[in-house]
Image (cartoon, rainbow, N blue to C red; front, side, top):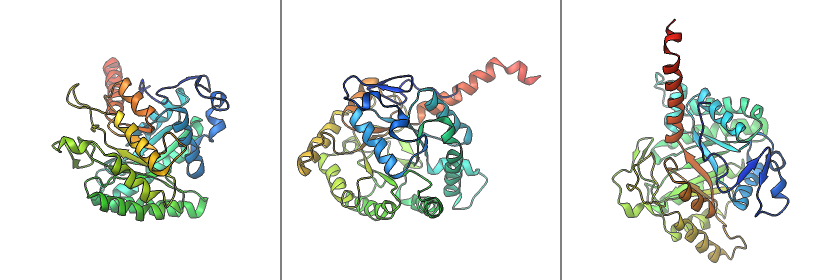
Length: 341
């Protein structure tokens, strides 16, 4: 098994056989299997909303793993099957380019590679018997042509099958002024809502580096999103639909950093929930779907606190890249002489 992660699936819950064991959650959720909630295979639209509402209500975050090849996709699907866990497979702009082949210099290569990866997952997901969310990762303003290429593929797939190719997409315009960030998200969400595609957006800055966007030297204060910023997003997007999530920064970074170099404050996510709840007089304790980026290297306590404050998706990239490579390295070392024969 080239991909294992101790926190996969159900932070704050445990599972036995095919059933959720959730003593604090009333029936029917305590005795529901995944198949009772949504069907296995790629989930979109109403099924995706149902799955993420379940995650928010029960209290777990679905792991989202960046993939770059059919073999990494299969490794993630295998891990999800073994853990009886819903899973998110996501592709970045660079991952799409890698899947297409680095020799291709066509400007549409990243979109073509991302679509090819999605098609592979579409073909295989149902055989693993778990719900799978197909997602595209960070898209900065300069990468919008890549986003447009995937949306075109969604539209073509929707015309044939009545659902989009991808379950969800992310816009990361956090480098832009908040007003522009939100305005662009609104325009894209209007297009996506017609096909019931989930939108993930980011406000506030995640540190580190991803897909050529380098925030390693950013002002530390900008690594913490305010409740007012989160509510501004909610106010704008909720007028269009309810299928959206917010990646609010709480000191998290991409990559893995030595202890002490990063100050995570997942308690701030609870402040966002409380602020929006009061603003909209919501009966829900956690009215916002939140996302945790930069999950690799986080402690169990940090993850649990984030999840308890409404995080329903947690990105894991660096840890899983290492697990995949380390598995290959160990296999080669153990079988070196045999393979030379």
